[in-house]
Image (cartoon, rainbow, N blue to C red; front, side, top):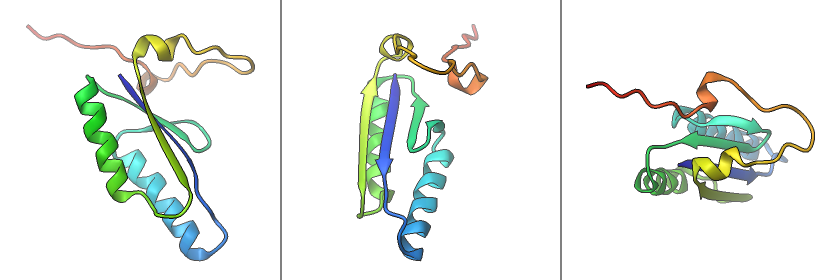
Length: 101
């Protein structure tokens, strides 16, 4: 599963900019990677973990602006069509499981 967070936060005042930086830093601390500017994704093991993380984000989200989240499957994510640009092949953007027996 993937949790995708998209946001548009105001940056007019110094308080708004601080809230923006804190929110972005919190996303990175939770394991998110930047897909595009203001679009972050996180790989999770199942839907329950995605819902739990979604609730955690709601706790530290600023009150101003728009923040949206979407839980998608790995199959839906890999079916994404790239109209322009190249696919990100960084290791943190892959969902490879290691099974230890």
